[in-house]
Structures are given as structure tokens and as C-alpha cells.
Amino acid sequence: MLRTNRLKRALSEQREVYGVLASLPTAASIELIAEAGFDFVVIDTEHVLINPETVEHMIRTAESYELTPLVRVADDNPKTLLRLLDGGAQGIVLPSVEDPERLAAAIRACKYAPQGTRSLNAGRPGAFGKHSLAEYVQKANDEILVVAMIESRAGVERIDELCAVDGLDLVLEGAADLSQSLGVSWQTAHPEVLKAVCRVQQRAADHGLPYAAFLRHADAKAEWRERGVRTFLLGDERGIAFRALTSALKEARA
Image 1 (tube, helix red, strand yellow):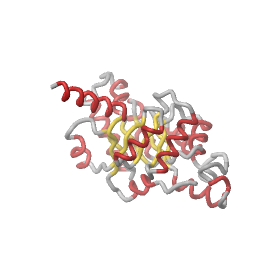
Image 2 (cartoon, one colour):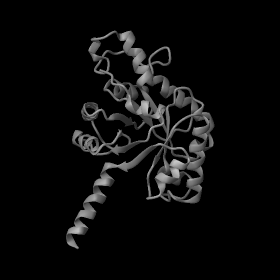
Image 3 (tube, rainbow, N blue to C red):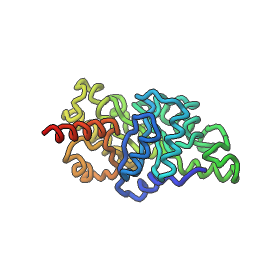
Image 4 (cartoon, rainbow, N blue to C red):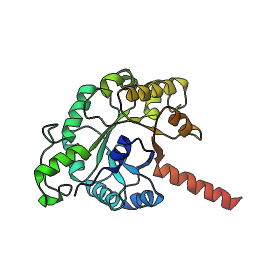
């Protein structure tokens, strides 16, 4: 059955929350993330080859821990969004958002009527029809979270239009791809990248939208907190695991 979206509640209450990208296509990765104490996870299907059944197992595992499962999609095809939501995803992360019309269409695809055009189905989020479908539809519209990643010059330039789209819940930093778009590939601390990222965060705040930032260096959290940010990502679990393994081996060899 559809769970209460704990991340969405935390955002509305401006509570500090922490998430991580899940790039390893296995439910065991979700167990590790949940046991570590994270508040939400973003299952990555944009950069990772992963089958639908595995995604559903990962979502189900997150549910068992009350860890909010979001899915980063490879595209905004309505059928892609539909299947992930019917599989239990509590939110959709849209990469490289640049066009307000396409963003609005994607949001409609995530919402049932009258807010949207999502096809009706009493699958696992609807408890297979155990409860009133009319009540489920309303609850689903209230609980589903839609996130826009701003990862290009075009997205930054149109940030006011994007933030004005009804139904958008959260804006997510995309400094890595943004650095490419600005001609300074992988220089996420470059002044032009930082200027663009801060502009996006400020415009989101001006529109009353929360912003999620990656913690890329030791002082990042303090800097973002000063700007009012309370939602943080620590990267992906592959990178975290790699750094931990490298450190452990270095210590053992010392």
C-alpha cells in the first residue's frame, strides 16, 4: 500500500534530511543505506543498467525500513514514470530539466486526475484494490514527490519559469553536468559553476521551493545551511564504498 512520504513531510517542516544515490542494482545496497540511517534514497536508472524487477525489489526494501525511495529516470516518457510509480516509487527525479512545458507534462504524468493524466491502476501502491480507489488516487497525488535536477546552462537561464511550474516539489543540484554545459568540465568548484548553482538555489527559495545540495567538501554543509538549505545528498554509494575500501586498505598497509 502507498506509504506516507516521510521526505515530503520533512521538506514541508524544513527538517534536515540526508540522502544518497543508489547505483548498485541490488536490494542489499538499499539495506546498507537504510541501516546506516539515511532518510531517503535516489535509485539511479539514468546511469545504471537495471531491470524493472530489481528496481521494484529495491523500492520494496526501502519501504520495509521507512526509507523514502525516489527514482532518477533516464527520460520523462510518461509510460516510464507510470511503471515506476505503479511499482511503488514515492518520487521521481527528472534529470537535466530545461523546459517548463516538458516539466509540466512530466508532473501531469505523475498525478492522477484532476491534477494530471496518470493511468489508473490498483497495483501494489493501491493495495491491489483493498481500499477505496478514489481515496487512493487522492492520497497518491498528495504523497508523490517530483524533483527537477538543474544540470545545464539552459536550465539555469530558465530557472524562474521552471520553479513556477505547479506541482514541482524539490529542486536538486546538478553541478557535475552543469560544469560541462558551462565549458569547465568536472570543475564543480569553478566560480562560474558555483555562481550558477547559487542562483538556482536562490530562485528556488524565492519561489518557496526547497533545494537539495550535494555535500562535495568539508565546509559545504555549513555554507548551504547559511543559505537555508536543509536537504543534502552525500553522492552515490559506490563512491562512498570505494573511498572507504581505499582508506581501509591504506590503513592496513601503513
